[in-house]
Image (cartoon, rainbow, N blue to C red; front, side):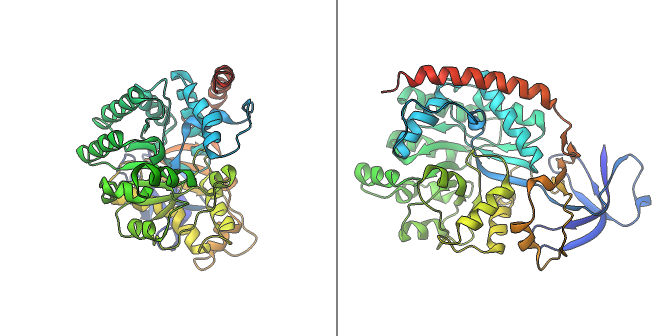
Length: 429
């Protein structure tokens, strides 16, 4: 059914122009919105939503997520307290991803999609890993996201860290998925990907005109490993395989890069995704966008699914370590839509909208919108969410899925996952 948003104040994300109008929203992956002044200009087959006093704008998108981490909240601590980034991976995240099975992957994806939708996000770029349940894992995530109504760009995290057999299975899952779906070629990080696997991943990227989605210099150990093994820094290594030449390529983190690497990225077609809160949590450093130009957008790195929170964290933590102001924070927040649009990915058309109930005590205008974006707006102000022209959240409640029943399922799966992790923990040297 066609939606009619009555009495709306529409904020254009590209130029922050405010328009008071009624908005006709059509369905479909390539659906549109149309401003109308007279309801008689359209037929009467539509659902009306009164947006008086509300703000309507483009829904949000997450540039780098890890849905597989959704069941980690509140889990027991590892038996050994990690002392550095490699140990954080070994004792926490690589222990978790090895314990995932089909049901826990589905539960993780459902929990993530629900959280995204309720926080105003209708598109997620995800980076998945489940070394003991690789085949079909991307289909499980895709179906779960579709069930909730959240569009996606998925990849499997190919890595040599669990041996060549798992790397080959990751490559096979990637190709199988790309044959019928939009997606990316996922790699963990340079320090767990050898030359043979890197070349095969780059070949897949070319074969399917895709891009590489990889963690880059998240910790200094990534650079140290690359220089020791290959005699070059991480970004140079990726460039040697032609990975930076593809506009769909996403470089996550990029904390420990030098001026030469920044110039390589700036002059390339690749994009960088910042994940400030995850970097703070892992104590790996602070992001600095200096020299990268407009190649930056924002992600959550699996910490949560709230993009407003991520943008505000990028701004506040960046005051001492980055060149970021109100406008730059919003530009990075919004830039993921430019990436999706320029690469012709489906699922982020104009009919993806969020209705904000934001009763500000001060005037809100084009000129001061960035200040409200940083200091006022939160996900609590998300009232309705529209994905591909369909209402998926109404009055803060999901319409596409039984949330209570689903959360019972995710809790059950979380308990099982934690038990398997505890058993595995005792086996880790």
